[in-house]
Length: 136
Image (cartoon, rainbow, N blue to C red; front, side, top):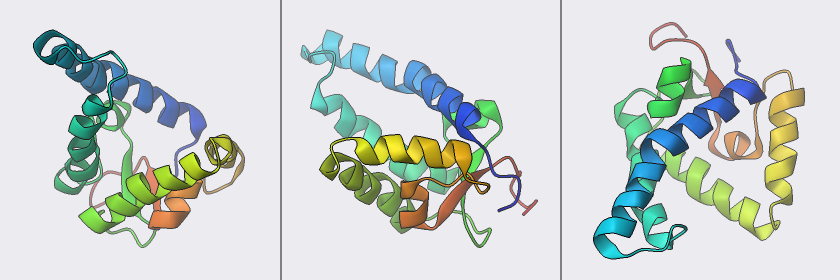
C-alpha cells in the first residue's frame, strides 16, 4: 500500500466531514422538515454523497480532501460505485451485525496494521492513501 494513512488522519477527516457536510444537512432537515436530530432521513440524504462523490472526485470526499487523503483500490485504480457500495453498505452491515464490535476491531486495525486497512477496506478491496491522483 503506497503511503497508506493511519487512524488519526482518518478520524479527523471523518470529524471534518461530519461538521462540514452531515451537520448542515441534519440542521436543514430539522428546520425544513421537522426531523429529529438523529433522524434516519439525514442518513438517506448523506448516503448518495458518500457513495457517489468519491467516484466522481477520485476518491475524495470533503473531509478527506481537506486532510489530503483519499480512497483508492488496492491495485491503485480509482474507486467505482460498486466498490463504494461494498465499502459503505456491506461494511456497515458487518458493523451492525457485530453490534459495533467490528467497528472497534477496525479502528485497531487501522492503528496497528502496517497497511492501515480496516474491515470495510478488506471487503471493498480499498485503502486510504496520501497519494494524489496519478501518483500511484
